Image 1 (cartoon, rainbow, N blue to C red):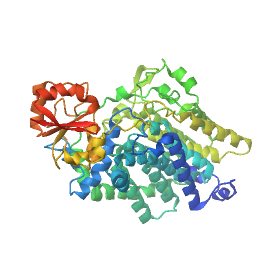
Image 2: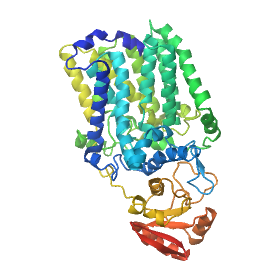
Image 3: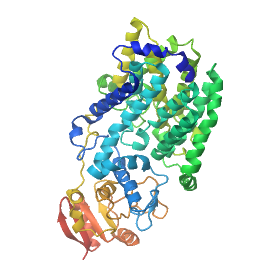
Image 4: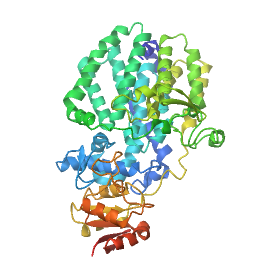
Length: 565
């Protein structure tokens, strides 16, 4: 990477770049461009309805969980509770959050927004900031190695607006990837000598801490891929090899500071409470080799042509995070051809190949045909990432593509420059999603009961309440709307706590219709004293509640509250 920086055009060239801002203004302009692009691409008219509609796609119940998570950490801090253990779920025992995706760092950062406007607004704003920050972090790295504004701006967009980002937008733990390019940026500056040792250690420690607070999994995979990149850099470096070796102790010190001094109380519980079994089979979420050029979802540009060729060729259930499109594939080929005489070109391409191979998973699938084993089968046995899905390694593929884009564009001369810019621009357009599909921009269905304060007249503070809703995790989102005013006997945290292996552990929602005595025993075991039923599912559960001896004591605002007569 540093070799690439040294072989890039001279920094003096940037002053002659047409219509390009310089200095700190360039960074501000880049951030503003990404924020506007994120808002237009993902929000559209929903920007005026942040408190009543979801911006990220809704293909799971994870959005409800993250609404809860954004409320939990601030609530725990202000109420003297352990942020890594919640007693408002799985009452009366509670549950550990160490191995959940509770994003404590982002939750605390968004605290003012959550407190002022509610968790849904906070979640939507965070969703728009994810591609913005990712693009900006990649821009800083690209600018450092290319010294050009426009190539770096496009390079940052390749990372911030990738198919990976689009698909993971409803998962802040996976979408908030900006610390990764920033960590690389800081390391490049340390190796080239423009950042002092103390400043480097402090800034890298802070960056790694931010990454850990977002996702243990991404922190661990970043460490592994950073090691791979470092070894490749040593192999291809020429004049910078000593500087690379000299930087290693300072990287180690940053890790020691973060893990031993700051995260020691977190790391030991994480290792001690690690899941004993794989929760998701990576082969069921594989990335087909053809997914690199065939999208899973509809794209804004060329969707008819692309989807026509995808239909029937690749299983629609295979992960779509691997999609980079034919435009960016053409960029890779062009870069390999025109920059083949540079040593760092083959180092960058080697890392790209390794990352892309690991992304495919433990087995190679080609047009849904299961073929040879791949190295991911061994990688996924390492601690902290044994439950990771290989498709998430696309973070490192797209970051590499961002650097390739910046370097390739910055080295263009004459008429070929326009051709290169056109290829990268088309490649970017081909990965922009069509968010008009029904999974995007759906309205929030939180009953008015939880929003207008009516719950205060029906539920006692700290009472254990079972909620019958349309789908799992909605009860957690509604609990968050009341600022954790009541406890729930269930939850949606990924792994189910060992003390609760019942069929109701993730909530009560159709089409489940439990046996009356089984439900009676579960209610008694968890100390449930009231049941809230959403009006839309009341016909489904009302006969069951009658058999349990419950009667409605309050009705209106989208729900009914039931207690024993």
